[in-house]
Amino acid sequence: MSRLRILLLAPDANPESISLALEGYSHGEALAQLHAVTLVARSCNEEALRRTQAPFHVIEAIGMPWLDRIYAWSLRWIFKDNYHSRALTPFLYPFSLAFEWRAWRRMRTRIIAGEFDIVLRLLPANPVLPSPFPFLLRNCSVPFVIGPINGGLPWPQGFSQADNQKSWIDNLRDLYRFLPFARSTYRRAAAIIAGSSQTYAEFATYRDKLFFVPENGVSRSLCSGNVRPCEDDSKLELIFLGALVPYKACDLALRAAAPFLRSGLAHFTVVGDGPERNRLEQLTNSLGIEESVSFCGMLTHTEAMQRLRSADVMVYPSVREFGGAVVVEALAAGAVPFVADFGGPGDTVRPDVGFKVPLTNESDVVSQMEGFLGELVHNRNLLHQLREQGISYVRECLTWEAKAQAVTRVLQWVVRRGPKPDLPPPKALVAGTVASW
Image (cartoon, rainbow, N blue to C red):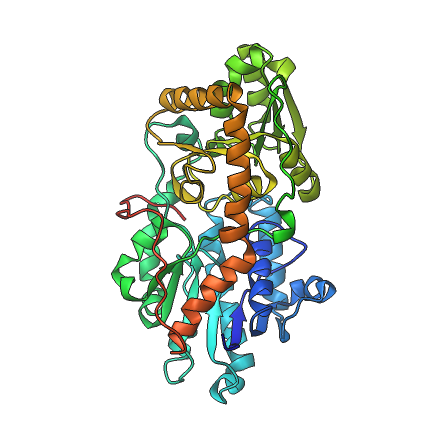
């Protein structure tokens, strides 16, 4: 495999952050192990990037002092640091364009001079935030690739958890197609990498240059070594890990586990915090399971992973999850995932590593999850088998190294150094008519 000279656009990549910022950094670092990667990021992330001493060829820090101040002020005083706000994505649009314009002005001489084989935009991952780069590169021989992108997941019908979270702005999502550069981003891109089956379906028009690579990954170091033994007479250790907001549906997890918690066959740990916590604590009281449920609040990533390694099962029936990084982490830690067969978790979980239930209605989801939990309560051999297979699956397919290898195959094809890779999505879907930012 020949090394490529990659100009990597990932403005928010930060090894000391969480969520997409950490994902972008981890993916970029894995690519830098294989290629000569020039990382272009915001100046506010430069110190963290250099402290980590990742193997990037060059780190180019783009400063936008006034815009960065406006963004920070707006996030604090307008959005109240609510990163779950639906309005945050359209708000980011002008800042995203400004960053890429500044990046182009900084790097264009080197691009035109042929210093790079390819331009890859990793972040932002949301497909409704277009890039001016394909248009700016139109007279250059350097191809542009975007992804993995992820988004466009519709809100499921018949779930109060979705109804309580959905916002009026969700109905405006498809207007992004009329924004400047929205069409040229994907029409001019040499390849589009989708991070979910849903996003793949949305961009099926471009199937000749469309590939699937999962959005999430984990470090190989997080994969458990030896699987903790499952004693037949021990309690089944259940865990929920995530923000306590309506669409994460922790209430469905508690209701499904209630029979086993009341009978002393299981214990449930809730890791996370948010506006739903009081209601969830009241729910445990009404179900008579408060003695078997522990609310831990927010934990560091290290502490959360320790909790996952001590758990047997992660019950995570989120009714709308784009990626679901915590599901991959649970598999790596040896916790068997129970998820909704929808979005990122539905793409990630296979029958040989966990359980997934269709989003039909609340009572049916609870009933199916209760049945699966009962199966593991009384069959610890199955639990042990699923845990071992889950860890192997992550090591082979879901590490950042594996993800970088898959993306490399796409990039090699784009620059005509390799065959076209066969990277289909886990599911064949038709894009929904109602999607969200």
